[in-house]
Length: 247
Image (cartoon, rainbow, N blue to C red; front, side):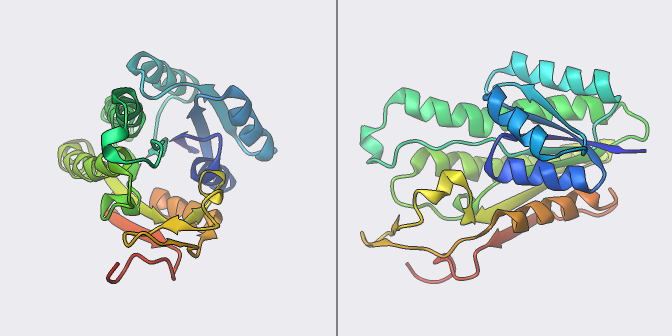
C-alpha cells in the first residue's frame, strides 16, 4: 500500500525539496500553498512521481479543511503531514512592526500548523491501519532568535509546545509527532541573505549554508520509520553556522 503525505508550503524551498524526495521514495504527495503556479511547477519537476498540487492558504481553517477532505477523498488515508509552511516579518525593530505583520506570521506559522494538525488527527485516528506521523518545521529559531525576528521566533518557540502536546495527545491514536529544526538551508527565501546575516553584536557576517536536499532526506528518513519509533526532535544545520557557542 502506497503511503500518502501532505506537505504544506510545497511550492518552493524546503517544502518543494521534501515533497520531491518523498515522491521519489514511494509516497503519494499532496502539496499545498498559496501560489498555484509554484505548486504546479513542483508537480512538473516530479515527472512521473505522484505529486498532487492543491491551492490553499493554511491560515484559513476552511481552506485547510478542504485540503484534507480532498486528500481523504482521493487517497483514502493520510500517513504523514509535514507542517512546513512558514513566513517571516520584515527585519525591523520590534516596536516598529504593525499589528498586521505580527498577525500574518502567527496566522501561517502557528495557526496554520494547528489547523492542519487537527485535520490530520481526524483522518489518522479513524483509518485502517490506524495512526500516522506529523512533522513540524521548528527552525533553529525555536531555540535562539536572530535580531529583529520577534514574530518568527515567537511562533517557532510555540511550535515546540504544539509538537510536544501533539506527541502526548496523539499517543492514544498511534500518531507520532516530530519537530525538525533547520539552520541555514539554501533556499530562495534565504538566498538573499547569503551575503551576510545581522549578528547580535551588530555586525553583518556571511554564514555557511547547506544544500536543501539534506533536509529533504531527513524528512524522508523521519517519514519512513515504523510508528513504534519516532525522531522526537532533530536539528539539521550547516556545520559551521554560528549557532553553537557564544554570540
